[in-house]
Image (cartoon, rainbow, N blue to C red; front, side, top):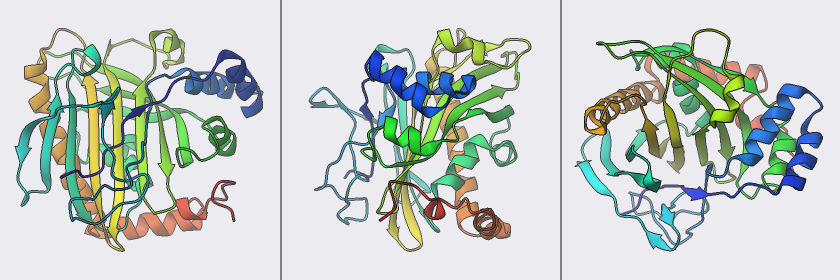
Amino acid sequence: MSCLTSMSCLNAFGKSRLWRTVSFISNNRETAILGEVLLRQSHVCYPMSQPQSKNICGHPLSYPVTLSLFSGTEKLRWKTIEERKDRLVHQIQKIDNFQGLPAPLVRFRSSLSGPCVGECFANFIMDIDERKKWDSQIEQVYEAYPIHDLDAANIAMGFGRYGDCSRLGIGYCQTKANLGISPREQLILCGIQNFSDGSCIVWGTEMEEWHNHLFPPGERHTRAKSHIFSTTLTPTSENSFDVEYALQLEVGGKLPTWCTTPILVDTIKKMFIHAQGFFGGEHGNLEAYLSEQKRHNCFPVDRQSLLMTP
């Protein structure tokens, strides 16, 4: 019973095309750096279509929503941690040492009421005020280097092959010290891909060590790494949607995964509780957000993308 996962590794562009694309994106140095980073990433998560799949409600799903994680041609085996249909997060699974890395790949599946708006879900992670509502360990998080020329980014991604990129940039994240554990920091390339059927993917992957010059000035902390981050949202009706949240987080330092994984699971559950309240209209936050986005002409369906224009 597959829900909706999207995990296909996209190979980096060739060097000549990389530099042509970087030059096309912008002459601005910071944006050019981002273009280089984007095209050099070889493990960003993108969708792979499986048109015959169904969601957890049994409805057929079109590209890109019901997807599976593959390594080569063999389907990977997930170990179920929790599974109860009556819970908000009704399934949690993991693959230990995925891609030979010390951290497990963990995925969470849930169904929520409300409109399927990927930008809102992304804000739970990247907006400091929203993040503090469910993550007590967050110190700071922000978009350090945004890419504003999204049409150029879409061209670099293959003209809509992976949906319409509505947001792209590099984010910085720092957690607090806690119980003798030092602060952690991350530098993540992330974005939002929208699809014509109303579904979307919020994705991210950790920057490489040679991008450390993009860290903000100041004291450096132990580096944590999100090797894979992918959240797929798929509408199941006009006012409901399925969510699959997948994360492979290497905490850094000498902390064993048997210690960090339960903490990760508990933290992500809190995020889904917050999401349930937000999309359910709690305190009018969703209505206020949608009204504000429309006022600023930034709501995803209103963006004048060359990919979504008839």
